[in-house]
Image (cartoon, one colour):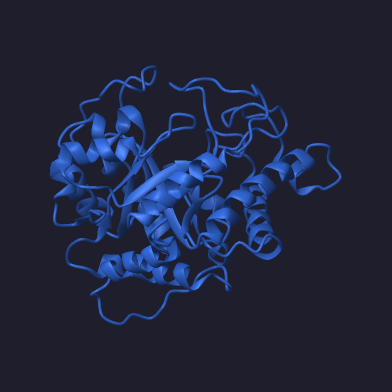
Length: 345
């Protein structure tokens, strides 16, 4: 690449600045790379701005059809590039071709990392979720089979399959670290339900999160991550919070017509005193057809952030039918004074 990603990260941070001098916020990983510290400090300071304080974002789709074409389509409609691009190492069968193997699908980090590196080299920020394969059955993330305590027991039969996934994901993250790319890392998202790690015993979930943090930072020496804890909107969300020593940012995955429905959960999460993001947003519609536009009015979204979640530092519209490019008035949203987009290159 002509521009090394680490240089781009610092350029991004400089562009976010003009805020004056602020005390550097504390990262959970004491050995976090300088580029991580710089980006985290600037993201944390965004809510103090009068304008351009919320980064725009869009999930780019599933393997094997994930691409930056989604960002390009948004640009064609709005003349703005989203600042945050969302990715996932795993795949689903939802509106995408089925690939081999049928079960125990591996993380596709080689394919996804090239997209991440490209987006960061262009001056953007990347966030990564993990819809991990069910280690008990080899099914997709939505297969809710399994006891989380098994994954903390090296003597259990499922433990090697789980660690094999973690190790392969770590290879992908290490590849990004070698390229000096900072990742907004969002493991075990929506732990209040939906996936095999969700809706389980909260104390065991917290142990699982803490062990992943320890394994990646201490054993795998991964220091290019900003760790984001992001439940679904729920009255039980805070039961699953593993503690500030293991979390850098918080977020909410919100599937509703308005952010107003999540304001109480947001208020509870803000008590953690961590930076906050709308880590997924999707308006309601026909869940059986996730490609048809839902005609949601994104033109009101920035005002909703001002009214209900003013400390938000970025939002990520979810894929396809939920996306900025598949609904109404995205240009109005991306030109709102509170919204900051990626500078064109």
